[in-house]
Length: 132
Image 1 (cartoon, rainbow, N blue to C red):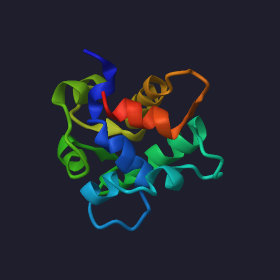
Image 2 (cartoon, one colour):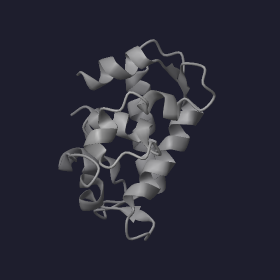
Image 3 (tube, rainbow, N blue to C red):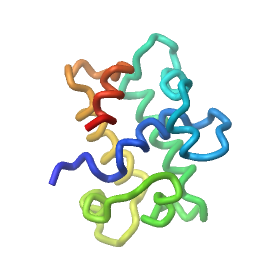
Image 4 (tube, rainbow, N blue to C red):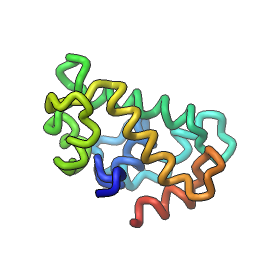
């Protein structure tokens, strides 16, 4: 199974849009400002550090009970979660993800979306990755 599927591709755009003030994840996913919100240095590209920083924000947003881990049910508030992929990310096999497990897995997704392997995501790469 490809490692891409922890969260369906819609979360990538949701994750990129955190902080836009949107009322719901569905609205955030369609936000034209999503890419710009993650492109913190406004250079038209999202580098690994910008993405990693956003993934930490997503983790802490999803951790509603603030216990330092996220469960499938907490993540499902944001997006559909594939249980097998969640299990692959859950290295400790405890049914929950630590911030390290979550961010590590999401960085694998960054690498998959970075089709030209230059260490940055362009708007086009994000759109192609989401369309898979």
